[in-house]
Length: 154
Image (cartoon, rainbow, N blue to C red):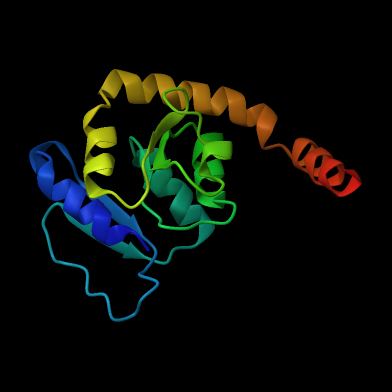
């Protein structure tokens, strides 16, 4: 989880400029997300509905405290969406800082706010283009199979 950090980060930013759509649900069932006119809770969605949300978004924010291979970040980039995520676990392998998105120090609401606040609309568009271009090579079935086989032969 890390949604609490994202909420704290959003509180420190000018919310007039943002609307947050949350897809999925909390890992900890006891967590009660706050109601806000600036947040839409979509819950768990089918893949086609997730793609629709990605198509309407300016950026994907992954505030996770831990991730294995963050498939949603790779999927977003394949669709041309830049990603703001923690600089830990597998995320730096997916997101190239200031090229296909922004990386922040994990476990820090202020670092998340800083990464979001540093992005302009123009930067996000450029990072989305870069993400789309790079992902068309990096996240193909052939490339993923090649890398998997390579790791087993090492």
